[in-house]
Amino acid sequence: MAKIDNQPTHPLSMDRLPTRYLNAVLIDDFATTHLGDFLLHPDGTFSQSNGDEDVESTIDGTNRLITRSFQNWHTHLPMQLNARDFSDGLALSDWLAKSIFPTEMRLTPEIAAIGAAAAAAEMCKTGSSFANDMYHFPGAIAPVLESAGLRAIVCGPQTQWPPQEGGDNGEVKRELERLLAKNSPSNLVQYGVATHAIYTCDQEVLLSGRDLAQKYDTTLHIHVSETRKEVADSFEATGLYPVEYLDSIDYFIPEKTVCAHGSWVKKSEMRIMAANQAILAHCPSSNMKLACGGTASLPAYLEAGVDVRLGTDGAASSGSGLDMAHEARMACLVQRHDHWDASALTAANAFKMATKDSKDWAVWNLNDIKMSPRGRANNRHISNLIYNGAQCLDLWVEGQAIRQNGQTLTLDEPAIINELNQAVETYYEGIE
Image 1 (cartoon, one colour):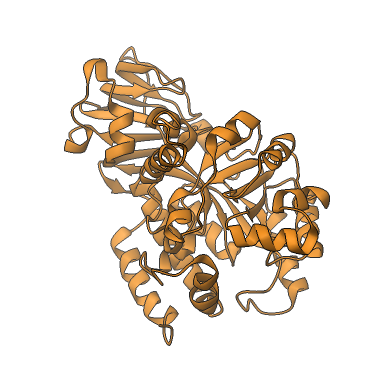
Image 2 (cartoon, helix red, strand yellow):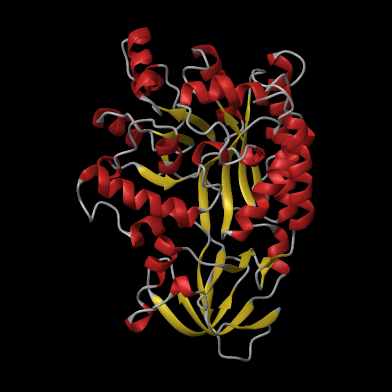
């Protein structure tokens, strides 16, 4: 299994005391349901509470469900700037060429930061504590996520186009290297390397990105086999399918490569990914909205031994923003639909994919009508959460309350909404 470490331990967490929840429901990493009083420890563990421990605070957990937080493995966070119906009705190639690339040519660090703040607010509100991002101006995105108290791998491009980031490709790469040099095991937010796709990056750029990621022992992030056209073009140009091509040029870094989409991939390519211990980030909503004609075949990927996670992609491409419960639901439905098999992906297994490796806690409102009925022995919580959604009341990262009682504490959500709406007027000026 891939060993990408998105869960460093921050020194500050060692100084924090646990938080006690009384009379709560807690579901652990093994899908076991616990009832009673619990301590949530800053290191991500939990234990039963005796009631006499030193704690930061005690919270009435009545009608609260405690689970691991969601982990979003493929995002373009500043695309919150792009409305969810942005260029609705366009296929991927037209969507990129006619809408996304023209707007991104006018992107600035300041506007990217506003989009990232809106994304961070939505992550908090929907119970996600981690994102593996790919976008321009990573140096503007990472500080926003750090300030919000969230975890992330912010993967920056090593090329100039698009947008016009200033200077030549060498200057853009040097800036990314400067950011990569700031990585530390204690940082909640890490920098990584993005090589967009084989149709936007030639072999030199792909291998340059690989070398950069290897040099700084960080994540290498790429879109792979998202559309049938991408696959056909690759075969026509190289005689190889995309994963085969990447393998032939020795692109993969074992345990460090994240491949987004993987919708049109042969079983032999899945075995290549497994051999290189690559993560597949499955993004069903985006694939369906852009009519890619296929979604990753999870039974085949899992049979091949690939480490599968879930991602939302960007708000513009998915139409569903950053709501990982919704994305897990869509994963369940599309796998069953595509395979004519109601057991192809259960809600419980989708939840495991969506929360894998999380050390953080999300606390959900069981008084939400969508979380009822609870079932015998509280056995319907995960299905309710995935299929119906729920209100995230609290979010804990290393003992810090990011969100509490339905209010995000580390971000000013009303101010972010105003900034986002104002920025969009400038961002879209002259774009239909």
